[in-house]
Each structure stands twice: as structure tokens, then as C-alpha cells.
Image (tube, rainbow, N blue to C red):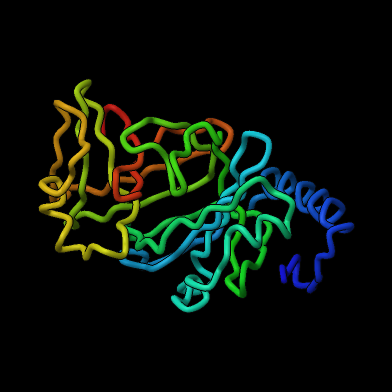
Length: 236
């Protein structure tokens, strides 16, 4: 059972294509008609994402601000069954994660419900950057198009990669298997970190504000634990 725009549909095979066509239209509208939503006190806020893969693209739906993605519902969400129902090539579950920034404003699109977990369209990436059955290829840069203003407060800790070109990648969210205090020593647990890359923790002496625009897209990477990072501007 899939809940589409607050109306329940059972999905016999003959209607799958019709409903998915409607969903593609809604997704296009979601991208064009995103609305800013302010989320306060997001540091360590739990969320999850559902990735819908079709025709070489991935539409990402995020639960932030709509609930904490209950573990029982998340575990019982069947990606293969739901992909067949929706007529998409594949569905991937991403999370649960916990945000690291202190507040954010996100451009969200349409709300859909997956196994009673509400989530809103938030971004689109190319499917070629996905690796295996979960998330992106570790330590591989990819372009993501979304509207998101992330604020890391003065005096708070942040966790970052520095690559061999001196680029700094700041952690957006941590995986459920780690606590915030675990992150200081996370670099020692990374087995696939590219040669010459370093992991660091620092306390901010001034806020970091990343104001990402969907129209401009931005660069991101994921690590081997499926945690994600945003490229800081050169003066970050």
C-alpha cells in the first residue's frame, strides 16, 4: 500500500504505470515548487530518506520535520516490494541519520508517505553515483541539486575531511551507529579513506552558513559509513 498525496491506493499491476506517471508529474512539480521550511535545533535530530531510482536519476525524499522515522516502520519498509508497486527501477533506504548542523532551512517539495513514514521531496542526483545497494560510492564527489541553508553555530564542534587538493568537506549528518562523541575518532575507523586525505574535528570560532541553491547545484561526498558531507567554499 502506498499513500499518495493523502489518498490511499491499492496498486494492481494494470494501474501501476498510470499512478507512477502521476507521481513523476508530482516529482517535477516538487522540484519546481519547493517551499522553504525552517528547522530549529537540528543537531542530533533523527531522520531518514527514501531514494526513488528511475531513468538514470534519483529523487530523494526526506522525513525531517515530519517525525523521527520510527524504527519499526523503517525496518518493515520493503524496498523491492515498494519499487514494484510504484513502477520504479529501485528503491533504496538511506538512514536513519542524525543531523549535525544546528539549524537549517530546506526547500521541500511534495509530501509522500512510505510505509506510514511521511517524507518530502528534497533533492535529485544522478543514479551513476550510487554504489551497491546503499548510498553513493564512498569518497566520490557527486553533484546534488537542492535548496538548503545549513547553519553551524559559533562554539560548536564540526567534523570534516580535507582532501589532497585542500578542499574541506563538512559533515552534514552522522549514522545511527555513532554518537556525536564518537565522531572525534571516526577517522581511525575508516578503512577506505583515500591516501592523503585527513579527518579533523574543530570548534568553530564563528558560525558557518552554507546557503545552497537548487539552481546552482553543489558538490558532496559520502564516506564508507554512508554519512554525507558538503564542500565548503574556499574561505570556509
